[in-house]
Image (cartoon, rainbow, N blue to C red; front, side, top):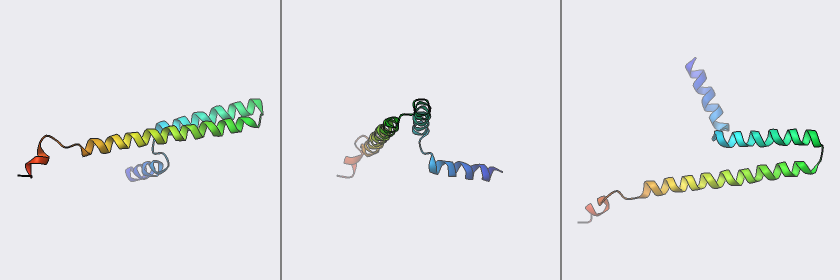
Length: 87
């Protein structure tokens, strides 16, 4: 039964890589659905699409900065180890 749970977790991981991003998308969609359902205005669909687009830009920028910081952290030399092989 463990293998089934592990397989399910891996499958879910293919579609949901960042739980915060997924939660924000679901909140935007839920609020948009409620507002559009109550108001029945076509232009609200454009507002919803704009909100999802801004969310995508924000999360992509955040992930890029996180990865960039991670790469810089790994590339930083430790002590004088870089100079030990010179002499």
